Length: 298
Image (tube, rainbow, N blue to C red; front, side):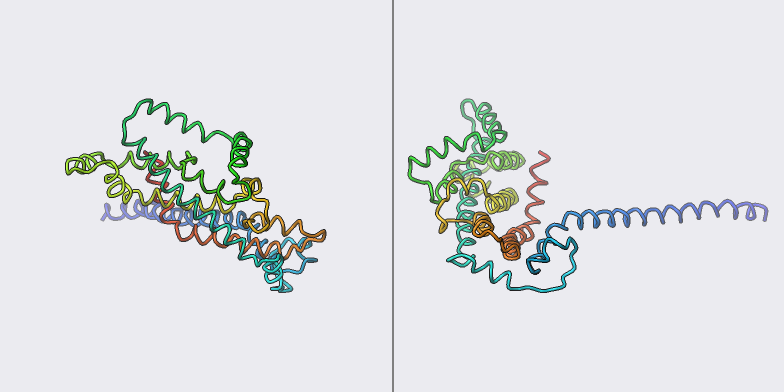
């Protein structure tokens, strides 16, 4: 009886401590989620404000910083869509042409260059790999003048060629490095087994390595789409004809075409131009995370 009476008060503090620990374990994830949601809303506020402003009259856009919508003005979308001699879809198609060519060029050229650095042995391999990495740190403003002179002599200015052809020459060193890291994680025994069966480097690359590189290829395609779609500086340099304008240039022209800017139409077309970026990111988010996870740790 004595042992039982002594054991009861000793077990009570232990039970209370366990309950307190469980409560803390439940509260901590809740606080983390609340903090993450608050940070996400803070970062998304400019985008939400732009979407709401695209449905406001011009006289209310810059007077209200909140997200409350009092007057719905859908005419901003129709006005911005038909603000030029061609519908805004013309500029979306131009951007799609440039983006498609850039994606195909990066996928083909960067994957071939990455396979060469990861699997082939050639003279001064480390030197050329170091030179390739140095180009990542080279600002685009350093090379834009000689590039423009070259493309001007070739007659490529005011065409899509300066925006597409360099991608087929493996000029994006970041994607080469990303794919090299991925290929190095593939066991060499697979290559050796295929070589025993009589396969050469082209067959090994296209039939074995390339199908295993889907996460890295998807990451390259998504980043290329986002960067090329949102590129303004390079497209402004080479495209001068309004018929060749891409989406960023059309948005700039929508602001500059009249003294009193229709900001409702500008925000409406900005929402339209951002929609493909969000859709591509949401559709490829799974491959993007897999590609970054499998290449960053090797």
